[in-house]
View 1 (cartoon, rainbow, N blue to C red):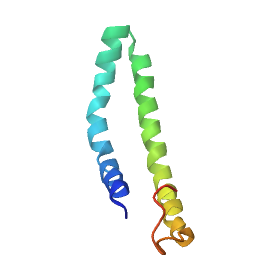
View 2: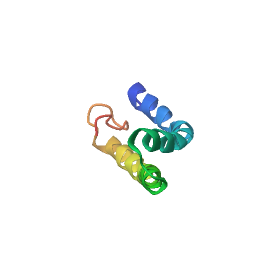
View 3: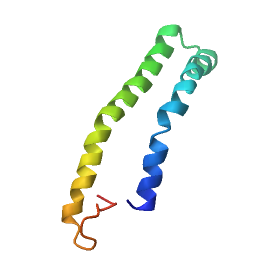
Length: 84
């Protein structure tokens, strides 16, 4: 796997670990600065959580499509195309 792809894949694995502790700050930030109530801040947190769930479900499909490009690579046979 090319170094840039390996780097982004390894960084992607840490996303839930550093995004979940930030969820409580949504209530403080938007509640204090923009006078949002509990329902509005809850909807903002829900949107973040739904986005993370969608990303988690789509990631295996993205990996599958990436690995399928190996058969189409004419320069380096057997290696996936990084820009695919």
